[in-house]
Image (cartoon, rainbow, N blue to C red; front, side, top):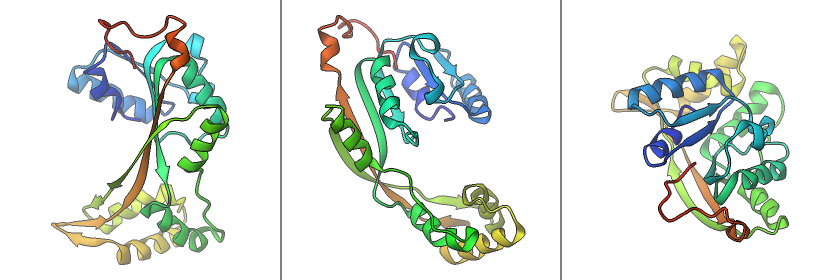
Amino acid sequence: GPGTLAIPLAQKATHVTAVEPADGMCSVMREKMAEYGVENITIVQKRWEEVDVASDLDPPYDVVVASFSLGMFDIRNAIEKMIQASSRYIYLYHFAGESTWSGMWKELWPRLHGRDYICGPMSDVLYNVLYQMGIYPNITTFRMRHDQRHSTLEDAVAELAPQARADTKEQKAVLRDYLEKAMKWEEGAFVLNGSSIRVKIWWEKQEDRSCGYGPQEDSAARI
């Protein structure tokens, strides 16, 4: 993404490598790096599925984090590459159950596209993949609010239309009608209240300790 995690982590660690494929996100991340005076981030502009750990990265890393970025067709292969890149810890953040916005898309999708909305795999699938790999991780579940604020209803339609794949005038009218009923006027803005249940899944690579890759007591973290 735009450095939401990479920048604060870089302020604590010796070095951070951020994997991000989108031009826009990389551009914003570089702007934020300059704004916060952060120079110890390397950006690898690729999809994780395309990354070669040995040639594109600089392993081993003390910590590997994948935060709400696990919409991958081959999740096992993606996790195996994270394990390959890490010398000790892997942290995965993902969703559990239905979020407010996935419920919204379920209601809107038939009206917009004439078919049901199918959610992507949630944390239960992720846990089962790890279990099949012989990994029994630590899990913490928490709820997080995510309220979207917009100065006008038109701004809300413009921002959400790409997510809704509402391209035509008729589709945008359907989206506008939904948002007009769903959004509340609070403190000078249109607000779309939302929340989701999120899961932190993490484990330590015990096997790497015997291979001499464990972090030294006086070393700073690389992420």
